[in-house]
Image 1 (cartoon, one colour):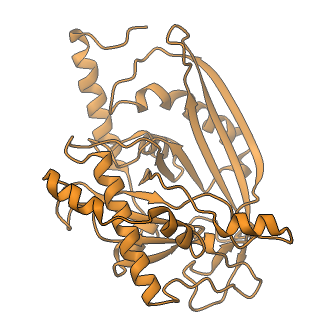
Image 2: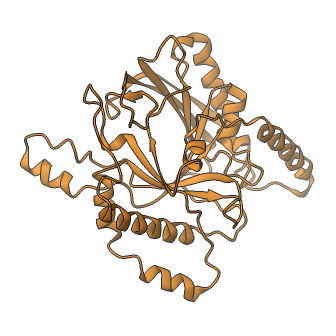
Image 3: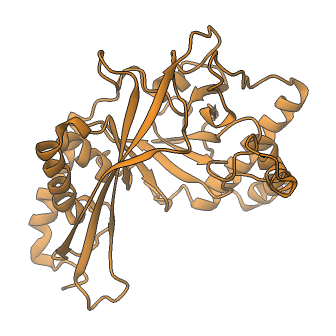
Length: 342
């Protein structure tokens, strides 16, 4: 398999770009999405990470089905076999009547203990080389085949949303893999990028990491001055937990244009991991927006998220060693990049 396209394949790239533009034009971000809620709030928006309002059918709000798709490639470049994977998890939900609840009345009762209700995979031969910004054309066909098979064989398990290992609108032509999956399957999708992707070669990963740290530091100062900034009040069934809240700092990521400015800002970031431990006790993650340009009014295409995962500090049990461990637990210090698919 060739590692790059030849000059006579420029027509193929052009056709791919046309399809990407078509996919981008069909992407719809629903009004109930977290992105819309965050942007309509003040600097620090508090969102339910398990808000399923608008996703479940009117007749069933007892559970939420979350799908996940990924493609794994062989380390050996001579091996042309890849595997596409599709999994669906079932989360039980409950209704909350609290006026102060940020979940729009719906919460997951056991967000850390979902049930695997469906799984499938498909091996396939790699025929398309990896080209930055064209990943969808390497992965969409096997993924769509797995999703279609599930929708036809077990339609009652069709997920409310699918998490895609890849970007959504955070893409040169606003059409990453998650957008392809969402538009072609008709199922809402969210792109989850583990690797930073620069749209214009100006914003660097170091800029993102530095600005995330600075935003966490600003939040930490505000939270310490105003205890109760984040409410972790339980609902009437004891279902509220710190993991059900995501804090969004609506300050946009800024570009570092001068090395001395970058160095000055980095010296102001102190005890980042200690701050993440504090943050982990009151919320399930911290995100800042990533915009299409340098201006505050430019479109938000993605969010850099830290503080996710890790042990639940509210679940200490009776074991003193577990309590000590969880007291010092934190979520991830390295950001992942969340963007809307469709």
